[in-house]
Every structure is written in C-alpha cells, then in structure tokens.
Image 1 (tube, rainbow, N blue to C red):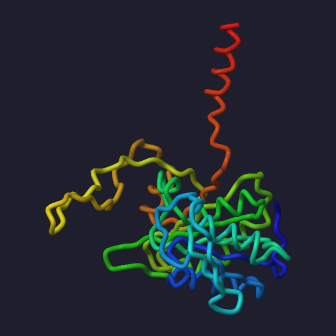
Image 2 (image 1 turned 30 degrees about the horizontal axis):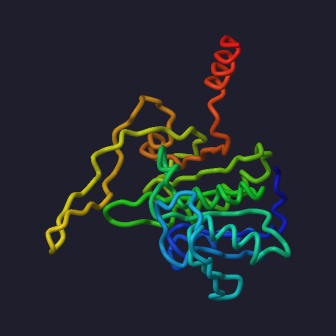
Image 3 (image 1 turned 135 degrees about the horizontal axis):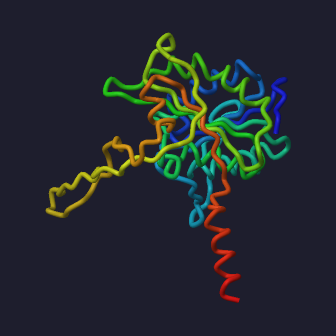
Length: 260
C-alpha cells in the first residue's frame, strides 16, 4: 500500500463525536492535502468504545453539512456507514481518525475508539492513521498536531504498509518548538492502577466511576511509546490486526504432533 497524495479522497472519523475540537483540527489538516474530504463521525462521544458494533439497534445517520455526516453509533459504525453507504460510489483512499483528546499509548489501543475507527478502515482495506493528543491539567493544546500532522501523513503514505497494518500517532503535551523529534516505536505496557472511584448515590446505592491514569510501567522497555512521549517525542507505532502469537502457535503444533 503506497498512496499517491494527488488529491486523495479522505474519510475522517473519531470517537469524541462530530462536534469535538480534535476532529475540526484534523479536517483542517486534511484539507491542506486534499479538497475531497469527508467527515463521518459518531454524533456523541464514544471514548473507550473499542472496536464495538451496534448490533441490536438501527444505525441512524444524518447529513449535518456539506460532506459531513453524524452517525448514532460507535466509531466502528461510523466508518462502516461512511465507507459502505455514504461513500459507496467512490470509496476513500485514506482514512484519518482523531485527533483524539487524550493519548492512546500502550494498552490504551485495546480500548480506544480512535484506534478502532482506523482498525475498521484497515479491515476494509483502506490505509488508516490514528492521531491522539496528550491532555494535561491545563487542558489540551492543538498547536502541535496541527503543526506536524500533514507532514507526518505525507511521510507515511508513500511507504508500502503490510496488509492489516494501521499507524498510531501520538503527540506530547508540548508546543511545536519544544518537540524533540518523531520516534517510530512499539507500544508498551503499563501497570493498571486502582482507578476505580467508589461512591454512593443519594439513595444509598453504591456505584463506580472508571477513571485515573495508568502511569507505572509494566516492563522496562526503554523504547516504548509512553516513554518516548514523556521524553518529548511524537510517536509513530505501526499496529497489526493479526494478533496471533506465532511462537506459541508453533509450540502448539509441536505439542499436537507429539500426541499423535
């Protein structure tokens, strides 16, 4: 998959919803590359939705502007509707997801609706890049993704990606002039902290909010994405949809052969 960026048809989606600031940033970025840009996104925030489909309710979608559509469903639903229905006459050449409000590092990729939108496009054989931006106590600064993203897209798309591969890009919470560089790196794994907030409602019934941050490293892999972000680098991680562990698979084959 090597993409010619001569006015490609681009589909944009996200998990923060069609009114999110980040998707407006990503549309501005996309329009510096092409004038054939379509936005098909969930009508509401779907953070943490993962790669989920709406199987037990109808998918309603409506046009909210020129080449802008909202979908009453998950990020996966939005991409599926966008590619297979709204853009069925001419499918997109490239899919961009985000820019997410909050990074998607390490095990976040298994929960992320931002990654899931790119994953669905990849399953539909459309090259996809997911973008996420770090949030701090002061909020989120969109200047760095807006400054770097177009060049990142231009640098990634001429490369021939293996089938079933998507790109995951994360930005640190730094202004553009303080970025140290761009680092290709693997996604890491962090310790799952006790991030369950246990409370009681006015009727005396207990409930839980899931929140907090995963900050402790699970391993000391120095090149992991969350470490590179902490050092001031933009990270680029190729993710592959084939989750088979081939070494264990070979061991299973050997075990079966031994038992024959």
